[in-house]
Image 1 (cartoon, rainbow, N blue to C red):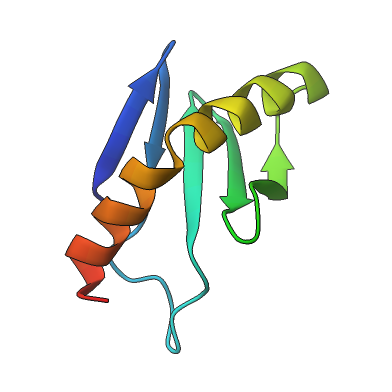
Image 2 (cartoon, rainbow, N blue to C red):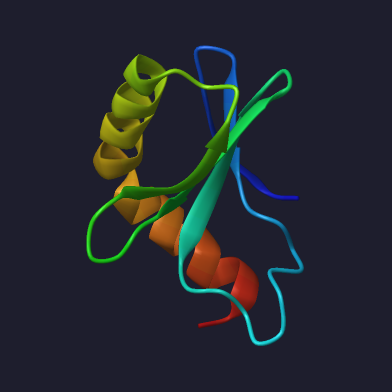
Length: 81
């Protein structure tokens, strides 16, 4: 489970096994028991969330957008795309 970024106690990561066929580019976010997933294309959008407020999701969406290039680079390096 490669961690791409840590932000205010949140871990932004993806799983090494992202399905077969692999799901489109996305990032998971976890803090304690609260989790969410953002699709990255065409722009960050919440795919699912559990235990996070709408304010947290808005803040995290901004973090994902700000770090999109880094997330894409890690994804491509890990999966060889």
